Amino acid sequence: QSTSTFQWPNAQLSYADLQLYEGDLSIFTDGCPMRGDSSTIPAQWLRLAYHDMSTHSVDDGTGGLDSSIQYELDMPQNIGEGMALSLNDFLSIGIVGPILGLADVMAMGVVFAVVGCGGPIIPYRAGRIDASTAGPGSVPQPQEDLATQTEKFKQMGFNATEMIMLVACGHTLGGVRQVDFPLIVTDVEDAFQNFDTTPQAYDNTIVSQFLQNTTQDVLSIGPNVTTRSDFRIFSSDGNVTMQSLLDPDTYIQTCGALLERMIDTVPSDMTLTEAISEPFDYLISDPSTVINPTEGATLTMFWVDREGSFCPSTGCSVESSGTEEVSFTTLANIQGFTAERYMFNTTINTTTSISKFWFEINNSGSDPITVDNGGGGFVIDQDSLFLDMRRSQTIIGSFPEFLRLVVAVRGDATSTASMTIFNPKGNATAPPFIPVITVIDLVLDEANPPDGNVTTMGNATTVTGFVDFSATSGGTTYTLP
Ligand code: HEM
Image (cartoon, rainbow, N blue to C red; front, side, top):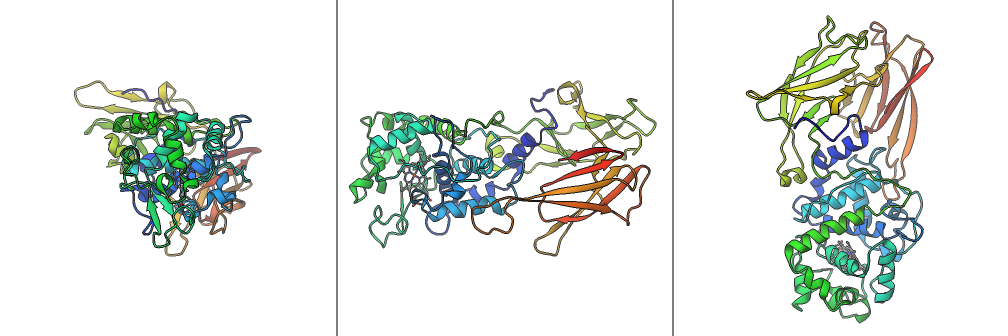
């Protein structure tokens, strides 16, 4: 392939791609693992996202998957220990930040939850904005009548048939906890009641067992008739929809499409990115380069300097200094993708610098392929402020580990620089997790005297990796997000 739909730089898509295909979320979901001795982590993540989405109103375009659930945990419809545990999961691994907020990570959690239990691959879009207050308590409850529930689903944007489908697509995982729902699971000996006999498989057993009258779903056959909400919903059209979901492929396809719509149900003032359904072909990441040419190919990076000369005396091309196989998440593995990361190492003159770069892939026996970001090359917007990767370091041996960051500013000792640190949860140990943003001025790094016209500023430390830099030099302000 000589072209890529992905245009560099795009922090949002790069980061979403990174988290989907190389990130850590799948550690929680691979193999559909249990949470303690009752439910599974994927079941809890799926329920959390569904409840968060349920606040959407098609009438006025408010609510949807916006992480408002953080502020709704004391509402009776959101009872269940899985809610807070899941939110903790998302905040515990350093993914939530200014690029993907909590709502975006919750949506990605659904993608991993479903695939981790063997379900369909749901295309992912980023761009949700986190709410800062609670939404309405509009999540349907088991004791409500069919008309009320149908109306609530309609408000979320799902018609009566889609309501049946969506519930059947949700209640394939997990079940009901006795302590939280004592009027539904009345036997105190029964701590947890799975919806079907395959609670760790994303399959249509919930459907087939319902139709065969062998269901164990306590929301269908529980002792309390009032809370047999699954029964009322599933049979609301004479089982026509449930019959259609008896075919496993139809079930998987239907659920994939409906859950995609579910996670993409957002307030109408939010715009989501295009869907990511596979790893981008060529992705430049800083400081590494990820592309996926044929194995055994050689790769060359070319660049032009700031003065526009194609090949300055200091050189203009370098061959890749090494490769490593990208360790992909399950999501890419089950789609059959593999990739190699190609690294490049070269010295760039600080004065003539670099204005754009591109690559050439040489597979023996075929024409070289140019990878140039759709024609324009990979353009370096500004080179007056950059992170000095070689002097920055992770300080280990302390808890939490922290980063010592050093930036270089083109200018003299009168230049100033600052860094804005995004901490996704401050010191909070339980929801709601509210981001804390701090700005720190960087001081001149005495240990590293100016080199040419580049001054080094640094010695600032942070425990999060979400840092923006800003510098003023010669009257101009530069930013490095
Ligand atoms: C009228 C609609 C619905 C009602 C009344 C309902 C009710 C319930 C109840 C009472 C539980 C037990 C929760 C617990 O013990 O922690 C539950 C669990 C669950 N629900 Fe629903 N639900 C509905 C629709 C949905 C939908 C549309 C989805 C997702 C698409 C969904 C996904 C789940 C999941 C995955 C669980 C298992 C949670 C776990 O095991 O921790 N539900 N539901």
